[in-house]
Length: 89
Image (cartoon, rainbow, N blue to C red; front, side, top):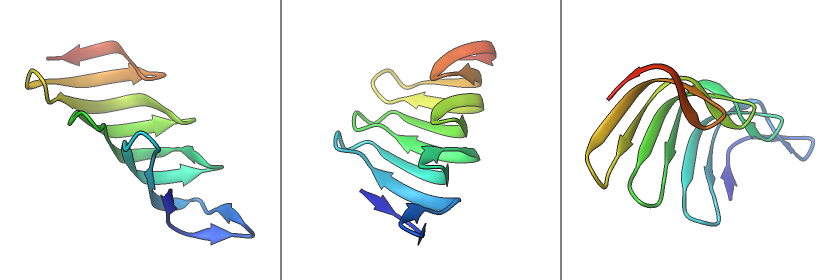
């Protein structure tokens, strides 16, 4: 479910909120119906949360993820939804 602006029947390139069928929630920029922003928030249904960059619908760039189950926080670089590059726990 998408909450935000539409233009000509398509999602506009602006901030919005998406609630996925698995109850994960994304808030941030959307371009061509994909997550795309320098600062977005993705909340997983298990309590984990990511805040940072999204490119081409992936967690990519600099960001911070908080793991609810073990209270760890990773801050650093990501590429295509994976921790990759410099970072710290």
